[in-house]
Amino acid sequence: MTRTMSTHDFSVLADAYAVVRLRPQDPVPPWALASPGFTCITRTVDEISIVCRDADAPLDGQASRGWVILRLHGPFPHAQVGVLASFAVPLAEARISIFALSTFDTDYILIKASQLQSALRALAGAGHTHVA
Image (cartoon, rainbow, N blue to C red):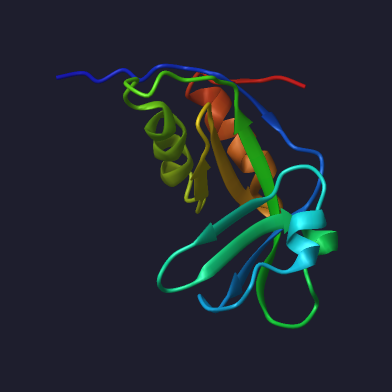
């Protein structure tokens, strides 16, 4: 059986990003709420994860730096199947690790900045269109 995945437009957000880990009982810090542009704050029973501009992340603490964000151009209906997979599969085949996030309307994929050109080639090969 041949499987075909849908193709989509995507763009690369302009800034460099970091993923910061805090303890679950910590308050959300003011720097996270003040970070302009894309910011994602997720609290679970195990941790708080904050994705923000690299320049806004604290220098102390646990942080993974050097990410870029691919914005998949939505909105996507919640019943639509395979949007994230259509990006994740070609990136995995190119040996590119991802950190995926979703909002009500769309999906975002973080990849290491050092792998951006390889990711763009892999996604173009899968039929996705990089738009400015």
